[in-house]
Amino acid sequence: MGVQLPQFTRRRVLRALGRDIVAVLLLTMGCSLGVPGDAESGQQKDSSDYQQYFPKYTRPAAIPFPTDNLFTEERAQLGKTLFFDPRLSGSNWISCATCHNPALSWGDGLPKAIGHGMTELTRRTPAIWNLAWATSLFWDGRTASLEEQALGPIAAQAEMNLSLDKMVAKLKGIPQYGPLFASAYANEPISEKTVAKALATFERTVISGKAPFDRWMEGDESAVSAAAKQGFVLFNTKANCVACHSGWRLTDDSFHDVGLAGEDRGRGTQLEGIEEAQFTFKTPTLRNVERRAPYMHDGATPTLEAVIDLYNRGGDVRRPSLSPQIKPLHLTAKEEQDLLAFLHTLTSVDAPVTVPTLPQ
Ligand code: HEC
Ligand code: HEC
Image 1 (tube, rainbow, N blue to C red):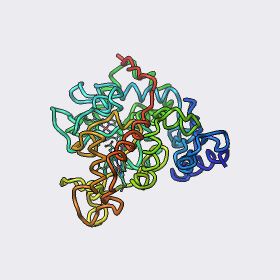
Image 2 (image 1 turned 90 degrees about the vertical axis):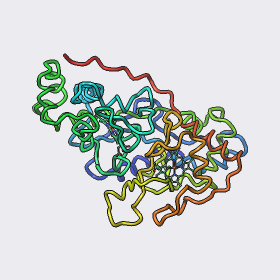
Image 3 (image 1 turned 90 degrees about the horizontal axis):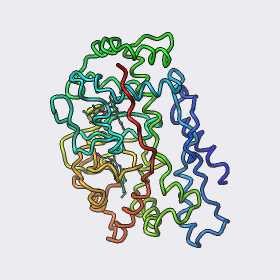
Image 4 (image 1 turned 60 degrees about the horizontal axis):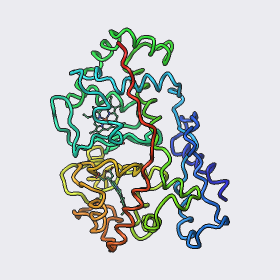
């Protein structure tokens, strides 16, 4: 059974992404096939308790790319350069990486993002890990692809405040960008479209590497603590976190109301009149989550301990959209600690990100 799992998962991943995505880039980080440990090979005797859940968390073998924007090194490099270039803002001061900072797990460490003119935005900056597999973007799911998403923050007055016409003119006026665009998108001009495609290609390569959790699933019993193993079982049973944080990225790509106080209707702003959608937000990945405090769309939950307490008391607000899974969990203090220990096993040690030299 173990041998067939990766293939099954790959098929499922591709199916979920839709028919236009047929091209894939093999992951090169040596952690691609999360083949579960062999049950027969002398594991601890309680290993069957948790091994039954491993298949749900198998990592895919390849990154999917859309057929109209296939991966090339040149595209990823151009996208990375644009991502770190503050000249994509009206003030020449704010880049994508100002808010999605690799040193802060591709977030900004703030409860709410701060944009152009020190404007505080209404929501927290999400990390951009593993979005190649995402089926919608933003906390409220208002865009469907990374290409579609990429230009929004550049033009938004409260974010980077640069009209897209001006952006194209500005990039054309930087001589060294010419050859970079030409080698990435031959026969296509420097345009909104090629900027969006390059940014999206780079973002698809931002993948969280192997974490202790993955090494444990591969059979290294010493990769995680006994508490974390108990926490993993709780995650899949009594605490039922898996109802929404499922799969290797630990997100179902769906929207739920977890009972946070506040007036932001989230997905409900896109689906007005649908009661179940009100106050729902996209389930965030839990990969590297310990490095991204404070938490939730409003950044109002300061620590992972506070997140677990929130779930344990069944959220703070009762209303029709509240997800049925959000109810008092009756976890003991020890069980809360075990869950926390499990969340800590999701942190990968990734190669440091080098900031590109910007074209002149
Ligand atoms: C001023 C801070 C800021 C800047 C600059 C910024 N972002 Fe964001 N980004 C955010 C915030 C805040 C959100 C969430 C907004 C929401 O959901 O309504 C977000 C959401 C996203 C998402 C969706 C993530 C997800 O999980 O759904 C992506 C992708 C993204 N940004 C990429 C970019 C790119 C590419 C750039 C540069 C062109 C950029 N961002 C510039 C703050 C910023
Ligand atoms: C009903 C679906 C659901 C269940 C069950 C659930 N979560 Fe969540 N989780 C979400 C959603 C949706 C968010 C984002 C909510 C928001 O910001 O409004 C979230 C946010 C989080 C965050 C914050 C991540 C970040 O980047 O801000 C953590 C940590 C987390 N959940 C852990 C857990 C744990 C641990 C459990 C089990 C005790 C659990 N979740 C159960 C859907 C769920």
